[in-house]
Length: 289
Image 1 (cartoon, rainbow, N blue to C red):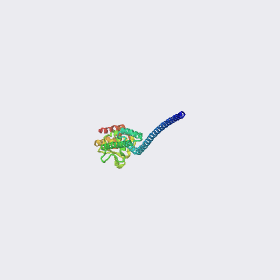
Image 2 (cartoon, helix red, strand yellow):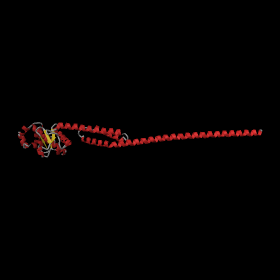
Image 3 (cartoon, helix red, strand yellow):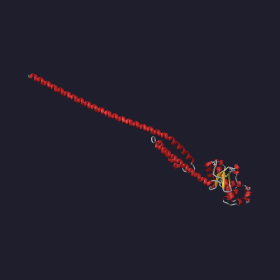
Image 4 (cartoon, rainbow, N blue to C red):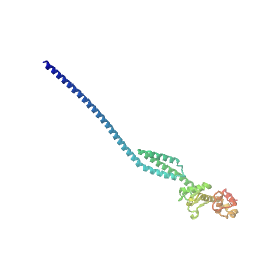
């Protein structure tokens, strides 16, 4: 009986030990499973974050490409406006001060060159260049209007074919030889177009368009010669009745005009001696000797 009880006790102990071992194994398996699940969850979260980042990066890259394409699409219009401004600045040379306009255009151009993704910046820059072109054009038009009002002859605009630049060159020559304020305009009517320039007794000078291309020395002489006629007209009566005028110049106002130009420092192809120059100098001051 005791023997059977001992066996039963041993069996019970072995059974308990087996149950305890099995329980411990299950706990470890459960712990391993939890750890694995946590690792998988961490990996899944990390993968989701990478996916979100990559999706965001793709979206940003796509938007960047769209913005760059939009900037490139707007640049030709900016370049066209810049070309128009360049032409306007060229036409303003010698008429208005364009230094400020040029500096503004250069700054705007640098802004466009640096901009890669913002179309609005290029659009605003294009509008700025357009406004500069309009401003330069307005200033040049005002300058031309002043010239027209100041120097227009009796037959209309001061130039026809020589253009504003040619006219400005002849005007400068006339001013240089002492004719500032004397009316000047282009005309082909001087001696039926055979004479390059002529003076009118009403106090203005006409010039043929081609003399705007003459070299400076010849153009200065031509204007000094015509200006001399203007001064001759002021003393015409006493001059033409002068015996000295007849004896020294053969009553030739063209010869006298040449001598008067020499006195002003602009000799032509016909010279005159000291006595002739002395007499001619009096006409410049309204005196007939």
